[in-house]
Each structure stands twice: as C-alpha cells, then as structure tokens.
Length: 286
Image (cartoon, rainbow, N blue to C red; front, side):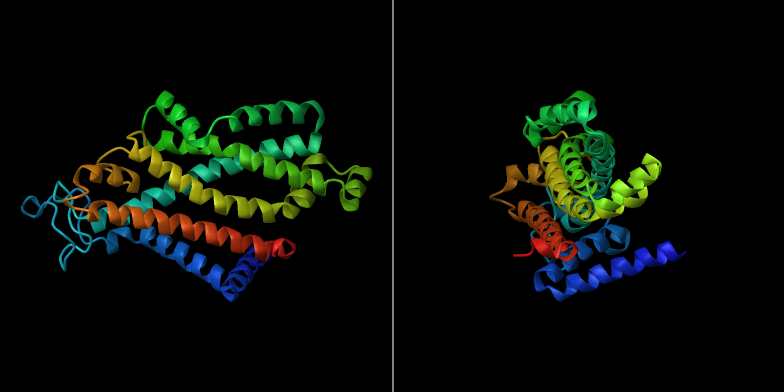
C-alpha cells in the first residue's frame, strides 16, 4: 500500500510541476482532452458512426452536424470522436509493445554488454537502417492490414529507440558505487536490475514513451491514409483524410476536421514530452 501511495503521490507531484510551466500546461490539457474524448466517445458522439443520413450527404457544418457529413451521409464529428479512441488505443498498445521489448533488450545489452550487447545492437541497427514508415508498411503488408497488425508493426518500428534509450541509461547507472556494492555483496542480478537500476532509468524511459505516442499516432494515420491501417467501417483520422481527397473542393471540411485533430494531438504529446523531460531531469532544461 505504501508503494502504491508513493507512486500516486509522485504522479500528482509531476502533474503539479507540469501545471507550473505554461507550455507543459498546454500539453497536459491537450492530452487530457484527447483522453476524455476517447473514454466518453459513446456519450459525446451524437450519432452512430455507421448511421447514414442519405438526404444529408456532404452537408456543411451546421447546428445539427457540427463538422458536417461525409459522402455517405455519416456525421463527421461522431467519426472524429471515435477516431480519437482508435488513435489513442493504437498509440498506447503499440508503445506498450515497443517499450516492453525495448526495456528487456536494452537492459540485457547495457547490463551484460559483450557479445549480448553486440548481437542486440546490431539487430537494432538493421531496423534503424529503414525509414520508420517504410518498415511499418513492409510489416503491415506482410501481415495484412488490420488493427492488431498495425499495432504490432508500429511496436516493432519503435523498439530500437527504446532499446538504445534503456541501454545508454543502464550503462551510465551500473557504474555507480551502489551498484558495484550490490554486486560485491552477492545480490542477485534480477534484484539489482529491478530494485536498483530500473528506478533510476525511469525518467528518460517515461519521456521517450510520451514522445513515442505522438509518433505512433502519426504512423497509424499514415498507414490508414494509404489503406493499410484501420479498415472500414472503423473510423480513423488517416482513412478519413484519404476518403476526403476526392471532395477537397466541394467539401473541404471532410479533410480539415481530421487534419486539425491529428496536428493538435501530435503537438500536445510532443509538448507534454518536452515538458516532462524538464520536470524529470531539470539539468536538461536550457
């Protein structure tokens, strides 16, 4: 119970520090809005995402349809709200995959070094050699377009970044005196890793996870735009942008709404990540 209360207290202190920074406040509020939209999508969205108003196709934004309707007569606002849920789900799960794999691989490479480090980091270098979007396209093309495969692809693409982040932090921490002392008294490796090293690498790890969320959301939107991400009838900001290309002149609101949400979401996560870095490691603040 003390551990849980300590974690909660630590999170509240971080939020308090973020609110002291005007930029951090903007990022925190922006991310909070996206999370709330995702959690309460059924209550916020006025219509079902598959409901078609055949007599109101491509209607401009008005009192009844806040963001207008698309070429099928579906409410764009409702689809945007549910699209936030999809984007956040993909972002959290894919980053969870990459963070878990990156933590394990980075910890092994940084702690054991030698041949283990060489094998792991050479494999990460191979993944780094490919542009992230091309690697994601290749993986999704091989596995097939679907929500699960999109999350797996994005998770694999982001793994090298987490691996390098954890490895660099572990190498820096494990040379400290308390780690050397723990080894000298015969403390088990797993205990050293979990109780002494992990708590001291959480700051850069958390910042990297926050920044990776924005990249994951952008990658998902890009894959969906190309038709290899979220498949209809599930709404995705990327697929909504793709569908709107044919009607840019006649119905520009079809492209404007998802584009604004993509930009604002990515910007909010990036701002939050930068502010979080300054809070967790004040030495990096210029």
